[in-house]
Image (cartoon, rainbow, N blue to C red; front, side, top):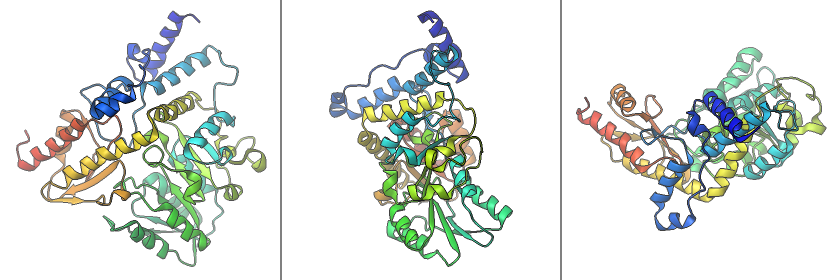
Amino acid sequence: MNRREALKGAAYAAALFGLPPARGATAAPPLPDKSVLERDPEAYWGRIRKEQFLLPDWRTFLNNGSLGVAPKVVVEAIVDYLNRSAALMVEEYPRWGYETLDEHRKEIAEFVGCRPEDLALTHNATEAMSTIANGLDLKAGDEVIMTDHEHPGGSCCWLQRQARHGIQVRQVKLPIPPSSPEQIADVLVSAIGPRTRVLSFSGITTTTGLVMPVRQICDAARSKGVITVIDGAHINGQIPVRLADLGCDYFASSPHKWLFAPAGCGLLYGREEMLDRLWVNVVTSGWDKKEELKAARFQMVGTNNRAIFEGFLAGVRFLKQIGPGRVYDRIHQLARGVYEKARTLPNVEMLTPADERMYAGIVSFRIKGLDLKPVWAMCKQRRIWALESDKFRVSTHIHTRPSDVDMLFEVIREVQSGKAA
């Protein structure tokens, strides 16, 4: 395949992902020198957005908590693999779903902090949560506790088992905003009863961005003989974490939110001692090879597009190249700015706690008495992409500009003051 043919193929693949052909075939430039960050941080992050992402200047994106934005290097990795696999310029099957992908899992496990054999690749956290919920041996009357702030992908798997198998699901109400991590831990641990078999909760809640005291809760639950399941859809890439240090039995993740992975990438982690207790849901050859395959049993789901995991690796390397600490700090710096702006609004009710240990890149708030329909209509007019709901949930990442945050608050103030057209 010559260069001209490769570029033509890249154009077709770019079209597949909804990108203009010219941009899909354009390589990302090198990262700005770290001296720029030291001299002028806003200039550095402005260049990161402009040079490393495909986001146009006119787009204000404040909904990373629903679906993240893949940088150019990730899109390029996907397109490149699609081209090479279509030309059979690879020596392995260009798929996943029957392969253990040991090298992929090794690199990803090193970043997320666990053993490769305890990690399985999935499509998203919802799939991983369903694998866990449907894989555990639970009988009628066994109790599963979860919070009232779970995403449907982390709650409906248990509710279906309640409807189908007669387990009992009990929802615990979280104080919003909580006063401390200790209060949250006490609420959940004290809810454990004699029939409780599973405690399932989000590591960072999708509703308010609350960072839960996972280790404290998991340690207390294990002392009572209760299995812990963490919906970690918002964790990887938003805050520093080592999965093996969380103390949970099972963990599900959606790295396409915060870890720069393309849509369709997920993770399932199981503590070594707990993997054997889980049945596979989608069954093909290898389902019973517990000792040989370990967590890889749960990614044997039939033919899938391997290009997305080439993109996943590119996303991990991109974050590491910038520096995880820099990324996490920038995410929180921007979110802190959102919090400070929100708390000055008239009639505001802050849902995210003021304690900075308890939020990272998501800030949620309500404004009492404000009709949100004109807010969302004006956001669409001004090309502000935010989560439309009965409250404001603003999620920031390194591609977020301070001016993006300012634009949202300008809309809110205009609607509050009655000046909105």
